[in-house]
Amino acid sequence: MSDKPTERQGNRLSKIVTRTGDAGTTGLGDGSRTTKDSLRIDAIGEIDELNSMLGVLLCEDLPEAVRGTLLDVQNDLFDLGGELCLPGMAVIQDGQVARLEEQVEAFNAGLPMLKEFILPGGTRPAALAHLARTVCRRAERAVVRLHHAEPLSDPARRYVNRLSDLLFILGRVLNRTSGRGDVLWQKSKNA
Image (cartoon, rainbow, N blue to C red; front, side):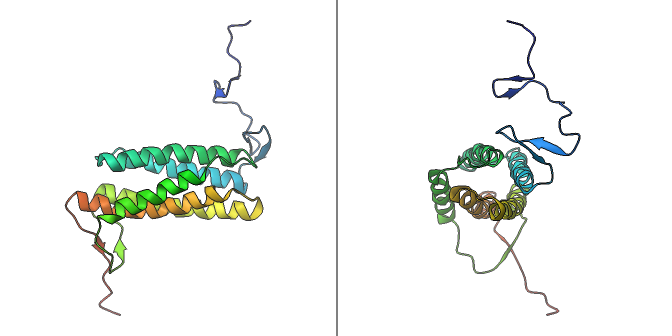
């Protein structure tokens, strides 16, 4: 047996520059190739960007409950990316969606009822949570577009939808835990 590493070792890449995508295609998890501008690759990219945005948010000083929730979400998003790169595979489960719904309820329970629209902002962590929410909504649109072309699992689509709700709530929670309230929208005085 040779000690020379192969291009692929198990499921891990040992070589990053492969040049296989130079012609505008990329490999999927099942070994097939697709164009880099396909609906599937667009959805994978949006989920990856969302996960990276959460990584930026996790660099902030956060309450441990929020941090733990976001770390769980990052792992779920990696699962979702795996599901998207394996056509026909269902990785995200109903339990993961239910966990998000429970977290939305738990985090929202301590917040005052909204009577006005709120603006993204307040503290830096809250603003980053709102930015992550908008990236999540864009990712959801990409997942829905892909679903119209190639059916995806119901839990995968529901997960991304529930996640944007959670990120909205976390923006509010992060402002409140820092001693700030929501940033409320004010109707234009010129209207």
